[in-house]
Structures are given as structure tokens and as C-alpha cells.
Length: 190
Image 1: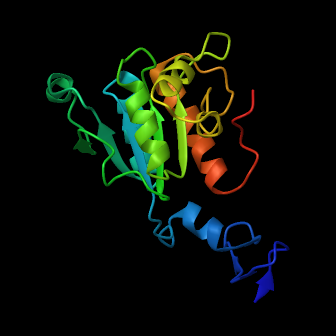
Image 2: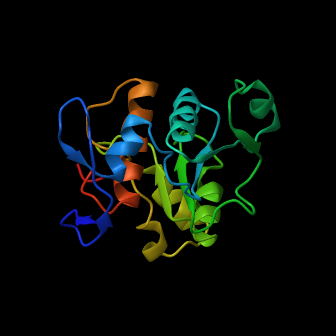
């Protein structure tokens, strides 16, 4: 057994085509061993184009993907996908769950964020341009959420790659969540 230099012991193997040594992470990347199972949930709040991509990419990254859409009509109109549908965060948001609010114009955003914070979600964020006023602050304050809790809401979200399209925003967000879960500097700082 050889050490990776990061305090863990890894089974080292050699590639037959280029004779370099690799560890289990490399074996996962090559598809020769399955990725380790993780108990993680990605809850995208509100049916939006960003939520559709976010849930798709999140599922690919090993998340249990859940669309939270409190409006029954919007829930019916949401495109079908490989994700669960819920009308609230009840019983969903806990220490395994990353909650991303994908529409900062919805009147329900304060309630959704309050519930995510109160349930102890692992990570809570809301889409939004950092150059504009953050509507969640007023919404949460009106609901009586203390400033110390409001400050736990991440905005902007994702790795700063200059995303503009729904797919790019989703990629940046999933990358940022993965970095955060792995305690790596992938970026929520802009």
C-alpha cells in the first residue's frame, strides 16, 4: 500500500498503456470501479430552466435530485425529468441536502429559504446577480429570520466562470457544491 501524501493509504495500480501509477480515484474516472455511494440530496426550488439543468447534472454527479415547486400549476407544467417532485422542503431538507433557489422573483422565496435554514440543510443558496439588491434578505427579515441565519444564504451561487445560460449556471452551481462538499477552494467567492 502506498500513501497518496494526503494521509490516506490507497491501492496503487499501473496503467498498461503508459506505465504511470494511479489510485482508486483514477480507477473511478476510468470506469474500472464504481464511484463510492454518497447520501446527498440536491433540492432545486422552483421550476425554471436552470432547475432542469441543475437536477440533470446533479443526478449525474450522484445526488438524489428533487424539484421543489409549491405552485401546483407550475409543478404540472414542469418538464419531465429524472428527478422527484415535491411541493415543499418538508422532510427533505437536512444535513445531507443542498438547497438552491432558482428564481429570486417568486413571492414564496422567503418561505422556502426560511424552511431550508430551519431544517438544517447542509447548504442554502439563491441565484442572483451580486450587483443587484438581494431580495431574499428583506423576505427573510419580514418572516422574522435572524440576521445570523440570513447570512448563511449563499448569493451568488456557483463557481465564477462567467455563466450566462441556464446550462452554464447549473454547471457552475454543481461544481461549486461539489467543491464545497469536498472542502476545496472551487469557489463561492466572487
